Image 1 (cartoon, rainbow, N blue to C red):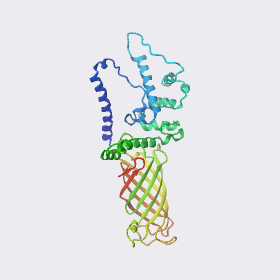
Image 2: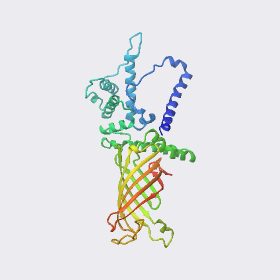
Image 3: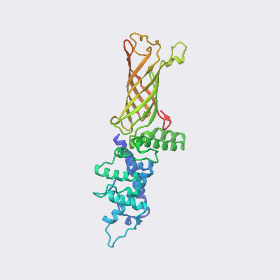
Image 4: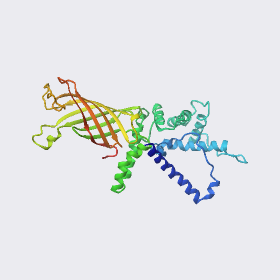
Length: 367
């Protein structure tokens, strides 16, 4: 996985470098006019292979002002000229001047705490503080950025998230990325569009394994189950999710008149998605759910003796499960089902869904 991720990063970096090389080959006189710059402050848009700034206009605006500030610092301190360099002056009352002054104060040791209030833009001040925090902590990873913005109630204006909703930003960013891929796929031929839609989650996860806000899973095996899972918090190390669904047993009854009846179990529960057990290709979830099974036995009747399964039981059902999903599409799941109020207790432990179809509602396709 590390090799694949590095190859993807090399692809983007090589593509950008080749553009610069082509420009110098076409206009070699530029080489003597270009001064190499070093970024002393980390840019926001560098995350997600340089695509992070596409999701928020404020990110792109901040990186623009950061580039101007870096260039001014270079001209002031690093560029060696025989004569005196005079930089263009900005009106002190202009927004540009106030934002650059904010950076001057914040990026210097012992800066004023309220240096950026004059900008009138709380988001900009948070982004400047984030740049300082990343520099001090020596952190360039996206998870640090998203967590910092959530802790400081950053308002994602383009994503439509208020400061109190900032913890949902990772899932929102992934949804926006998947929507972009879906729009691109819809304008291509069927074969190319299919490849784009199928490979979209893999490409995004190779950049950064962001969580899915809501997904729909249809599982098959000794029991058929339809489940909708909704993310509660994107930034926890074990991401919690609400699940709602229904389990169907003895579905063969629909195919014949003597097959008995279909056993339905409405379910509600909680899933935990451990971030440490997830990767770009594999997603792991642990689940605990409860529901009421409408079995073949009447209420209060004992389950069939020595039964391997609980489909004959009627009553409260609890389930403990673990699932493994490949590229957010193919899912393998096993569950332990216990009916605690039966006398005697009856339970089943089966690999109920060895072959599973999982579909993300955001991209609208399933494999």
